[in-house]
Structure formats: C-alpha cells, structure tokens
View 1 (tube, helix red, strand yellow):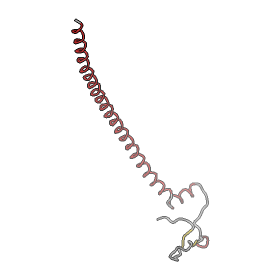
View 2 (spheres, rainbow, N blue to C red; view 1 turned 90 degrees about the horizontal axis):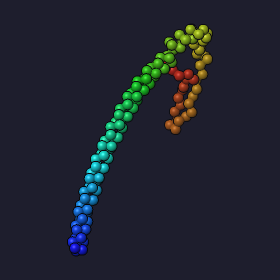
View 3 (tube, rainbow, N blue to C red; view 1 turned 180 degrees about the vertical axis):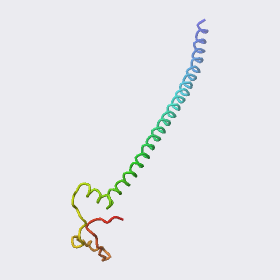
View 4 (cartoon, helix red, strand yellow; view 1 turned 30 degrees about the vertical axis):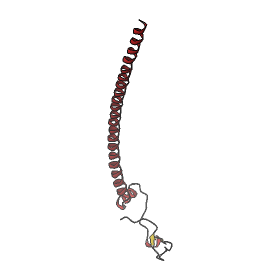
Length: 122
C-alpha cells in the first residue's frame, strides 16, 4: 500500500502543475486585458484634454485678435484727438520746428537713416 500512496501523491503533483500554469496564464491574460482597457481609457481622457485646450487656445486667439484691433484703433490719430478733446487736455499738433530728427548710428554698410522721434502711423 505504501507504494500506491507514493504513486498517488506523485500524480497529485502532476495535476497541480498544470493547474498552476493555467492560473498563471489566466492571470497574465486578465492583467493584460485590464492594462489594455486602462491605457485606452487614459488615451481617451488625454484626447478630451487636448480638445478642451484647443478650444481654449482658439478662444484666446480670437480675443487676442480683437484686442489687437482695439489697440490699433486706440493708437489712431482720430481716436487720440477725440480723447484729447473729451478730456480737455489742450494738446495741439507740434510745429515742424518742434520735431527733432534723430540720425541712426552708421551701419556696417555706411548708411545713415533718419528717424522721427515719434512713431508714424502706417
């Protein structure tokens, strides 16, 4: 009988090995599946963040364009004259003798440029 018990315990060990292999294989496949789904979810969330940030960027670019136009209008001589009259500042256009012309330092080519002290509107 002792011989039969040894044989049976050996057989149990043989049956236990495939069960462990199957369990490890199932855990690997299940873990891979869960990892795949988690990565797909992460990709989806990142896509949503990109979409939201692109919308915010577009809105900011539109606002920036509006502000550039507003700044251009506010720098115009007509607007400035209107504000001068509105606030009664008493400013007038300078006479030609009051405008100082500055020369730019000579460049490497030896050219000299004349520049007005104030910016001119284009």
